[in-house]
Image (cartoon, rainbow, N blue to C red; front, top):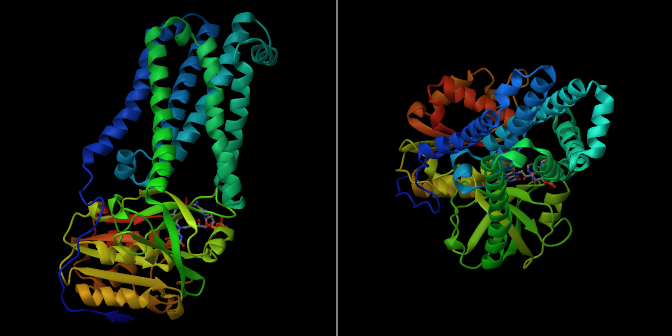
Amino acid sequence: MATVSAPARPGTRAAGPTRRVPTWWRDAAGLLAWGSMLVVVALWVRGGGLQDLTGGTGAALTTSGRLTGLVAADLMLVQVALMARVPFVERSYGQDELARRHRLVGFTSFWLLVAHIVLTVLGYATSARTGAWATAWDMVRTYPGMLLAAAGTALTVLVVVTSVRAARRRSRYESWHLVHLYGYLGAFLVVPHMVWTGRDFLTAPLASAYWWTAWALVALAVLVFRVALPLWRTGRHRVVVERVVWEGPGVFSLHLRGHGLSRLPAAAGQYFVWRFAGPGRTRGHPLSLSAAPHGDRLRVTAKVAGDGTAQMARLRPGTPVAFEGPYGRLTEAARTRPGVVLLGCGIGITPMRALLEGLAYEPGRATLIYRARSEADLVLREEIRDIAARRGAAVVELPGRRVPDRASWLPDWAARWDDAAALLRLVPDVADRDVYLCGPDRWMDAARTAALRAGVPAEQIHRERFSM
Ligand SMILES: Cc1cc2nc3c(=O)[nH]c(=O)nc-3n(C[C@H](O)[C@H](O)[C@H](O)COP(=O)(O)OP(=O)(O)OC[C@H]3O[C@@H](n4cnc5c(N)ncnc54)[C@H](O)[C@@H]3O)c2cc1C
């Protein structure tokens, strides 16, 4: 275990979002989502939904179908809004929590959609005393907008099937992502049947006003934050590749240069989604800053993981770069304590290296713990040591293979240590520090468990996942 400590030097100022995100932002975002569902249920009640429950089997089934359909449609909107990269939502929850919620809301919306179809068909069939299949076929053929809704449902089924974890693991990221985008088309295709046949649209102006406003706001959020803002920033800052530098086995840094980049609200610990001119330009790659932003320069460091990163390593100086971001909450803004522990594993060291440089801390109040498979894999090692020496931080390098028989954040040669005890031994006051984590998912889970067992409160643990 190599430990490098260092003499005292004053802390540097972190750029970008350094103010703590007010907790009410998160509450406000949650309230908006739950509030929208309450409004939908209230509109259903106002439209006679409750009375219909007592109007015989057919009417009860149909009105239940209406309610499940309306809530499913509302959740679809919530789902799209969660991934619209609205800054206050993104900064309140962080992208990986949003992705998890997006998934949960998506599956809930899907099952409600299934309930909507089944209940509505059974309701109509019961009232008309016809068979369910004949009724379904008749509805698709004759009701306005219903063919489009059927196509939208088919697309939604495709997205859901490919998002089930087992299928997701087997498919290429690009294929999964492309299919996933059809979900937006699916959500769009179900709109006409609501407008043309939905009782709320035909009879209740208040309900129509709600739905049109909700659709317009969500569409606007997607257009502004996922399309217009990235295009505007890309055009304004004209980022190009300055050079590519190999850092170690299969790991390289891209040095990027642009105009007026100091005006970007970017901070150490954040990431951007990058698109490079040339083959595969449509494909976005999330990569974290591996150095704090400096003037008109940014740097990212990537490990060759597949086609996209292999192509990146061959980029020529001057290649134009499009980008979305900055994103991520792994910044100074997450701080709750004066002291920090930065735990990075493998390529997860990139945001930790930037944070070591960019966070504000007093000498002796920061420790960076660096896990890698071997000494050769300790990329950026020299510069990490330099920063630590300048700023009075401690660095602990832990090269070595994984512990074979349990989930642990330690290397195999330290397997006899208990995970939490080892952390406490390295950083005795860890419970009174903020802990930043980045690395492979299982390693992060083990490190988080160790930190919790060592007495670190959950709200002091901040992490970024490199998988989605
Ligand atoms: C927030 C975040 C920050 C990241 N920061 C870094 C970093 O600083 N350095 C680094 O080396 N890697 C980072 N990654 C991972 C990096 O984005 C992927 O390794 C890269 O996009 C793989 O592209 P590829 O075409 O070479 O590989 P592929 O063959 O397409 O994929 C290889 C692996 O990467 C995953 N992957 C591919 N594209 C994405 C994507 N757009 N989002 C999430 N996972 C993807 C795939 O599921 C697969 O497991 C980060 C990921 C995220 C989500």
